[in-house]
Image 1 (cartoon, one colour):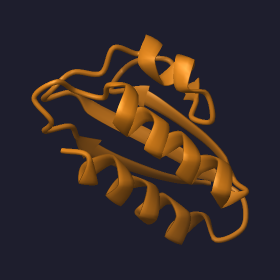
Image 2: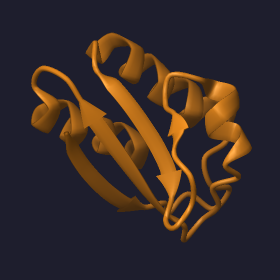
Image 3: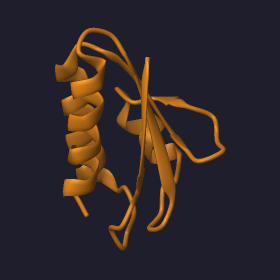
Length: 86
């Protein structure tokens, strides 16, 4: 299991488009991934509705946890995907 954190810089937070891109990356990874706001409960990262329900805003710190083959590289790639939407 691998955990990564990132601060969301996009002025509107994680909205539909970046959430959809992130979900596609998660689904393509073949790993089990969760996402949570710092201090919050984790949500399945393969569900756009679960991600949107977190209400992630600019300045929020998010934590992703990845389990499966190549978890280190998958986690790094997923963080890049999240931050690319900024």
